[in-house]
Image 1 (cartoon, rainbow, N blue to C red):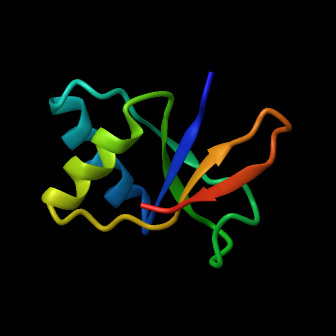
Image 2: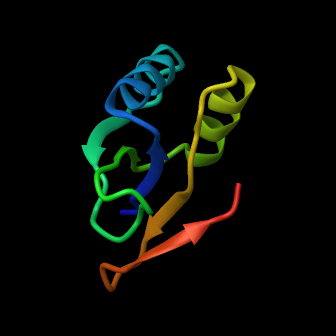
Image 3: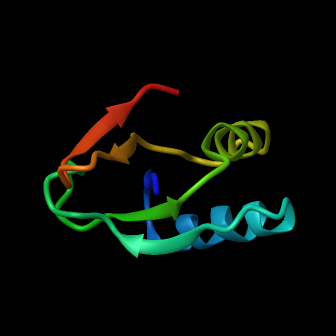
Length: 83
């Protein structure tokens, strides 16, 4: 199963994004971002398992602050996804 991470500026921002996606019937969990994915040591992210493109579109249409996005490879490594 694919796993996507969308980095957010803060836990509050991540929670707001998750609530917006929930209203569109897209399940997203707020998680601490793995070390090394963010330039600031402590970061939060939205974790999704599907509907990534749809989620990005919704967040952008609502001017939500979205950071870098990643997909988790089968090896466990994260690879940045361009949006």
